[in-house]
Structure formats: C-alpha cells, structure tokens
Amino acid sequence: KTRQLVDYVYSFYRDIPGGFSSSLSQPFESVLDSYHHEMRMKQQDIESCRDEARRAFSRKMDW
Image (cartoon, rainbow, N blue to C red; front, side, top):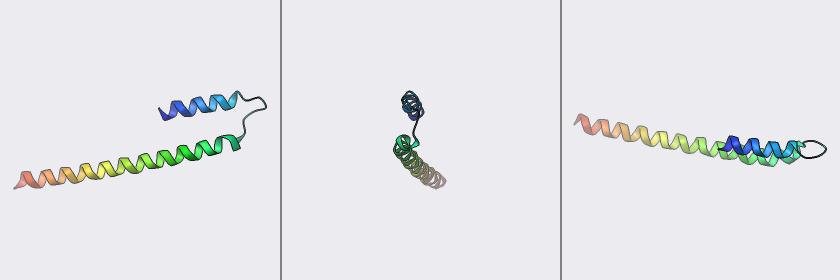
C-alpha cells in the first residue's frame, strides 16, 4: 500500500510544469522514512513477544 502511495505522489510531481523539485518531495520522503522505521520497530517488538511466548509455551510443555 505505501509503495502505491509513493508511486501516486511521484506521478503527481512528474506532472508539475517545469519539472520536479526535490524540495517538494523531501518532506514526504522524510515522513515516509519515519513511518517505515516505526513499522520496522513495531514488527521487531511483535517478533520479540512471539519468541517469548514460544519460549514460555515450551517451558510449560517441558514440565
């Protein structure tokens, strides 16, 4: 979904008369990078919780 959004925004920039200015896309790219970073951090948190749940389950099964 985010890739589609990026493509849509860049297609809008390409259609601007006089060309594309990086100063126009820079704020968007910054927010998008921040979003991706946040999603990676949440994914890592979820994976950590899953790993801990698996370990806890394994310990209970070993009893």
